[in-house]
Image 1 (cartoon, rainbow, N blue to C red):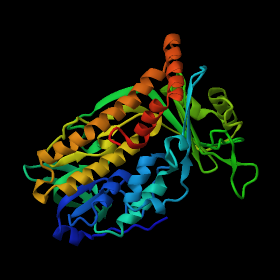
Image 2 (cartoon, helix red, strand yellow; image 1 turned 90 degrees about the vertical axis):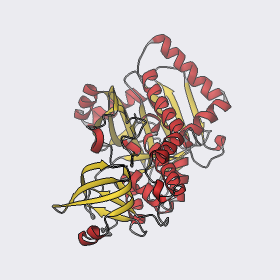
Image 3 (cartoon, rainbow, N blue to C red; image 1 turned 30 degrees about the horizontal axis):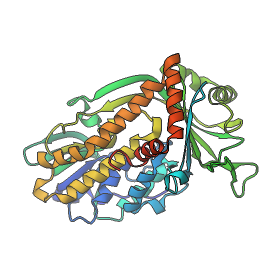
Image 4 (cartoon, helix red, strand yellow; image 1 turned 45 degrees about the vertical axis):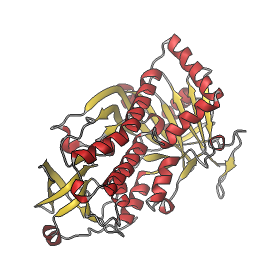
Length: 419
């Protein structure tokens, strides 16, 4: 675990309160933007509410696309990541149906389709990189107000019980969007589902080769290392198994009440019900870890920036259903594209409507396509209508049999609509 230190003390902050770019939120998306701007001669700061030495409490695993790996490599953090599990095959199926599709990395001329790693591992690698660059990291900073004028944005925040103010040419909201949610309400769609997340192990994890072989993990007894991710659509919602370490990260969606009941099951009942729901493609489910649950919905900020000199990034701009694992990957592309617009602009143009319009135009196709893709999958597959089910099965079979369609879908999943 890395030790984090604020780059600036309170006195220095008061003497140096004007920035070109101020990023509100030091999570992975905000940190990625900051790293993309290092060495640019722009004055950049990151305001993070967490104390400097606190570790992330988010125990989830993240699904990264191959395109996200390339971006993280450009940011210089990919090689620092630990315990990354590759995905070389994605198996897509529908419960009680013949329809299925399988994507293989080697058929698409990429080394991997994606990766799974823990959220804290990614956060630590990005944060450590920030400590060794020219970006100011202001920890323990709780932002209380964001206002704008014609030429800048003003940010009020509290740190160690004291009030502080800074001004910036561009304020980037990357903290989830709560700061502006009341003033500029996002569009929200409740899917009526919650996601239950946990870690599981099983008796026969799937290796990734088209022949279905398995690879044993060195130094273990009777276990194998999976490189296959599963996305299984059911009437109550999608279920995903993401290969991670010596087992899988499970994302099991269900109606809100059913998900709460699933939380109360003992381990034996949970593993039995999971086998009934998923089948025996990975053998017998052996163990289940701590379970967490959260509601799912589509949340999207207005396409237009809420005010000049302010832009929303990542989950502050859009929060999507986890099906197909698009959310964080889109946020990382948001950060990279915004960094390019910032670097191409002259300092006086930072945060102007013209600059923000160029960024929105650059991101519009990818953003709208990603939202439509995940929203459409949830709405199309979360029902048990016989005619619709037959059509879905035929669509999955067509996807599996038509190489050009398979490559199109895989490319979208790996690189987004602009890839």
